[in-house]
Image (cartoon, rainbow, N blue to C red; front, side):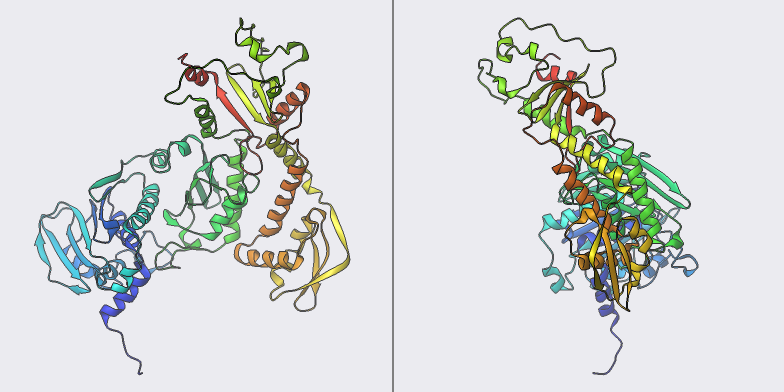
Length: 579
């Protein structure tokens, strides 16, 4: 077949396939246009998950009739000053959204520019632009997208059910709402208001509305500037985590992104506190010079490319670790709430006699105070033990339950400690402190690993040597390994070096070796810790509590589980109806 030029409507449909993947993609483009137009109030209305109707109303600057007609043409935009793709100051800039949407739906635009007494409407149906008409509308713009993908039935078949499509729309809108707390956002789906976020000057308040009270209560504020890079936001305590990364929101220069570099940096920062299958909650906003980041990587504008990825990664990891170090012994409040709720009685319960508590279920403070607990339930309670003038933060040990949990008392609370989880963290931190003097294992027969691109690994020979990995070039494509960290034991060296090469090429950091060492340290800590089921003396229990008070990150074990639960006296009084 001869080369020919495609018809304009077909070009628009191809562009729509790249830009408009589903209703949420159209919503994202339209709301970004509203934000670029200076809107301070945006309302989105959906029907059938956006398949039947998407309506976006804003109070932005609006468009003149000439701009309205030009706005639905391909590659027409007002957002590229001096045609500079590396000085993008807006969310949109490609000039493809409106013509792409109009090519696959029935697009109705009504707008009235600020300061004008006239409003205008333009309709584009299946790529056909109808004549401009006068209309009645307040200042701003109202856009309706009806019957999305009716002009491309094949694409329509790939849409999910309305509930799934709605969930994607909610996620997109929440991300935009996080980046613009000074703008009010409202979402109405099938005549039901799903959220109505009022404008606020407080990012923390907007995040509480979107991510929930648990996150807001247990979020650590982060604000760090390094040269021209500014990072701010909120991150959760390690003990507040989820089974997936859906609650990790990342922004670059105000733009919501999904970037592997940023996600990997978060994982590296939390690797000492969470298992590999657990994820923290966070919202991070990265600001850097526009010329240092390329946002023109993907038609949907959700991916970016950094000029100096290693510097960005280092800044992010350092900022997160510093912030986490400021709350080294905290646990998330939901842990205590869950413990209190576990003690609450059933809604309907018959009265019963006091329960029998066998002596084997607790260990007394001293041998002389070993009167059976069950006897004290029916007799005059003994005088409470006096506390010292200055009670340590985790109190003093009172008992050991099931040879697993230490019960401690402070002046205002009850502390329950998981002895194995707590000691695991103590041992792990001690092993980390000794990691600067890595024990090396000399290979009796040096191993040669053949690689396609060994230069990326060899360039970091000195850095790898600090971790106990001694390598040198061997021929054109080989790497000779003479020494490895003794902690690694039996390991597939070829797979390790290949992982290093892949991650160095992508991230500029030998993350695999660091993570492998961290995993080995965590395993050693686990096997060298006080095990559940071991009886502890009072002195041993108190010694463990004092070590926890003086050890970083002792509020959670290496897998993100809490090491202790604190129940406030006021909460316990409410539990028993004393308040």
